[in-house]
Length: 507
Image (cartoon, rainbow, N blue to C red; front, side):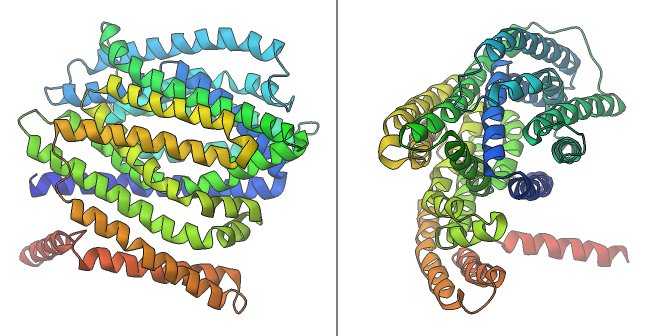
């Protein structure tokens, strides 16, 4: 990989990461506000409705955006002549499939109000369903920016969506409109913000030179997108099944409907947003990898292997940094943020999930970029089947922790199969010693965090306990990563010196 190419990838990852961090931080702070203002029960009901909506969205040709971005990246390498046709076909496919899904789900949501233990869930779904069309349009336009490697525009649109969603949710959910319940307000705010964001994005598409064209043969997008759509349908179905079965099982084991909704809300609306925080960093890398890998030819195997190997190490390091925080300090972090103990205990106990989650995110993106969508789907389907078994069997033994146990098994199995296939196609395990060292350094860092917490907890305010007990071990871990050259920072110094030299020369 040339220096310029590596610099381009680093810059792209930095752009996507910056916007992703800002977006997730805004969303996270808003979830904190909503959790405190509306309570865990309302959050749990809304999360159940969202799980059904996202399942519907996955059915509506959700694999199209990823395939579209890859097709555009490949086409741009040769002038971009077919890009308008691809975009038009993607619009037609996703909008038509969204209308079909709505035609099926509206009667179902109307006539099956008792499918969930809380009768408020499906009426909220009917409010959200029109957003399928606007989200489909939004995703196609974002994929146009993605395939063209316009990562600033691609990332900014996600931040804009979050800002609009927060603004409209505040208007509708906090009692400003008389007679509107908070959970219904959350759903209305979700719908309106989604529609407005899609309209803004379409206008931006035309401003930046985008244009429609004669539709391409639908099969060129549909065939490779079907495994991705199937994968996401599995994911959406599992999410909806989880939202249905876990509260039911909790009720069966002695909780009231309200307690079951609140427990589900604590896990999905409090613990899980914290647990998924590292994915905004690994996800940024995955976004950049898809068009980058798609443009590599088979003769560039060394460059391909280097990028994949570096991405896997990056995922392990990022997961390790958050594990150092979450295992010893999960309860304290959740108490400080949400004023809730149970979600923090859940976060600590489930923190090791970060490794398989991060690896699955990177390896699945790599396989999709290499054109192995079917293999990626099969691997995920096997993992998802194991998750479903856990959700059915384990709640009677470990309650809500069945979600963590099943998710860990699902992602671990699918990641292992992804890695095996990737290594067959491109030798990626070039630096196993570095990966092992980055894992070993986690143990003393976690032990130090526990020690500092126990010393400081009763002596200083909670914020400073978290900052000191978490900050010092994280910094020491990062120092070890650099000192043992697991991450080579010498290239960054060379680039900085080169930039300063150029500035001096121009002066």
